[in-house]
Every structure is written in C-alpha cells, then in structure tokens.
Image (cartoon, rainbow, N blue to C red; front, side, top):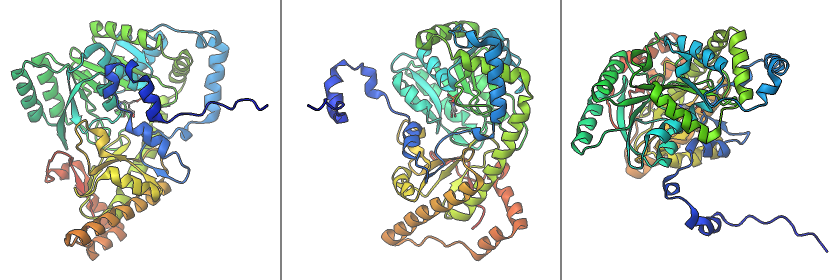
Length: 472
Ligand SMILES: Cc1ncc(COP(=O)(O)O)c(C=O)c1O
C-alpha cells in the first residue's frame, strides 16, 4: 500500500470562497504591494530588474560582517538572542540620534523608536492615527509600498501633484480648504522630501517652509519619510522638515539604504504623546524589533567610520544614475521624459500617453527587463504611462543593456501606434545622434537635465518636473 501523498493545493479561488465569511471587512480593500509581486516575477536570473529599491549589499565586506557578528557573539550573545524592550535598545537609539545629527537634526534619543524597517514605521503611524475613511494626504505619485498600507487601514488617500520643487502647496492648500468645507481634516500629510521614491525629485526649501507653516496653522501632522537623505550625489543638503519643526512632524528613517535592508531596522522620532501611542502599537505588532539586528547596528555604528561607507555607496550610485540617464537619452524615443534625481535610487520616466506601462511590463519581461509600472504609485489609477526605474541594484553594464532592451519595446509600441493612428513620430535628428556620440556637447547638453533648467516643462497630473531626453 502506498502512503498518501502530500495534500494537493486547491485553486486560489476555491480556497478564498471557503474562508470568505471569516475575513474582516478591511481585507476587501487590502492590496498586495506591486513591488513585492514584481520581485517574485523578476527574480529570474536572466531578467534585468529595475523594479526593486535594492541597495547594493555586495559592497559590504563579508570579513567585516563576520567581525561585527563575532563581537556581538562574544560581548552580548545571550542578550542578542533574547527579547528586548519595545522602545528599542538605548545604544541603538543613541546611534540613530547620531545618524540624524548627520542630517542636521538634534534629537533626544528618548524621542526615538526603533522599528522593524521604515515600512513598519508607516504602518504604526497609520495604526495609531487612522479610523476607516480618514483622510491621508500624499504626493502624486507616492511610495508604492505605502499604498497597500494606507489601503489596509481604509484611508481616503488624496494625492497632491508634484512639480520640480516637490508637492505643490497651492494645490495642498486648496485641497485643505475644500476638505474643511466638508468638515474633514486630514490625519496626516505623508511626504518624501528628499529624492522622492518614485518621482526622484527633492522638495525645495521654500516648499519645506510652506509645508511647515500650513501644518502648524492648521495643526496637522506631517509624516516625513527620509530613507535617502544621506544618499546625495549633487547639490547642497536641505534641512529636513523635522529640523524645521518637531511639534507637528513625525520623522521616519531607515538603515535599509545606508547599510542593509535585510537587517530590517528603521525608526520613528515623534512628539512624546505620539511616541507613547506608537510604542503601544508596536508592542502589539511584534513586541520588539530583532535584538540581533539591533546589536549589529549598535556595534557597527559605534566602531566604524560609517559615513565613509555611505560616501562610497553615494559614489557608486551616482555613477549608476549617470549611466542610466545617458542610456535613457540614447534609447528612449523623443516623446519620453524623465526626472534627474540629485540622489536616492530612482528615475521616474513618462512615456507618450498612448503607452500603458502595466501592459508594457509583460512585453518587457519577455525581453528580460523589468520596472515598476507607474499605477503602483497612485490610489486612483493615474500614472498609467509612467514607470519607476531603479539604478542602485544593477551594475553599469546591466543598466546599459536593460535600458537598451526597454528602448526596443518602447519603440515597438511607438511604431505600432504610428501605424494604427497614421501619425508619424519624428525620428531622432542627425544632430542629436552626433551629440550623443560627442562627449563635450553631451556634457553641455546635460545641463538641460539639471533641475534648474527644467522650469519650462509642463506640470500635469502624471508628468513630473521633467527632463526631456537631451538628445533629439
Ligand atoms: C520612501 C520609502 N519609505 C519606506 C521604505 C521602507 O524601507 P524599509 O526597508 O526600511 O522597510 C522604503 C523602501 O524602499 C521607501 O522607499
């Protein structure tokens, strides 16, 4: 007699039906993270993926990792293997305070709450502030990983257009006036002022001050999400919102992009009454963040010139960004536009509006290249002809080849559109081709990609502060 085999998985639809009556109402509005789905889809070795927000962890010396872990083992083995306080280890809060000081913030470690990544920080803020139907203001586009979080707390997310200076304050104020006329007040304004994910733009100082003024006048909380502030490749650092005001700003940071995403440690800094609620929310979520990771952080930031590592990452990512901007200029058709990020990990590209990037992705994966379709960064279906391109997790050669493949599938769509519509899309000019081949004019032309030169670009819903390809 043969032993019964493992139970065969049933169809997903059948399984959902079986349990449907048990699920909470909020699961109806839960979404999966587009990026998480894509990571599975694009994990194939032969796909060049611009879809993740991955730091290049291969740059961290394995010998140094061993050294830190063996110090943790010899000095704090039992504690690292034990539960820790929900409020996080004191030594870690102190090191976080040092990292915040590197961005001009003077913060008492007691106001800091280490979290399980910046993602948990967003989740906890939603958990303590949102009732179903409450309004959250976010940028358009916004961080694709925040969209499922906002949805799972049943928030009414209103997205405010961005231009080259970040979130538009005129639109924000008009939205707040209109909400007030309905007796509604947003619970918080979510913003990524530095090297926005996915938009790649940085909020200007004037806008930062205006945002603080608006929040203070109306007593609104701001959630400032700043994973990338230390990864600046050009230009001068700007003060964080938290350094301009810490009464109305809740700040979140993370070690994911400056050290390791796998360590899963981020943090919040918040006014004491808000922090107290966040601690309660965290306790019920996971008791405490990983003690092992926290001991690693405490050792690492106490013992090395961590800023040198951040500088080396910045140098590496700056080169990759430049390679991507050059490759885009070479391979995307003239109708495409994209941003020129001064730091961070992403370029936001927008194609002609007859191209749907969600559909394009299937075709791109056939050509072994992937990106995040723009719709993932909106709650309302906008962003259909945009895409987010990551440049930190891929080598320079992969960027060149991946953008070449992407250019091919985009051009295929443009040609198809011309055939079907009878419209002729302008070919690249010979002068443009020459400029690409000639380093000096290319460098001069590159200034057209600098933020200051982008003022002439239109500012429409899903087209950001944009740089048109410099060739053509
Ligand atoms: C804007 C933003 N916030 C939060 C996160 C989450 O980071 P963590 O890995 O620390 O959870 C990310 C990650 O890409 C991000 O880009």
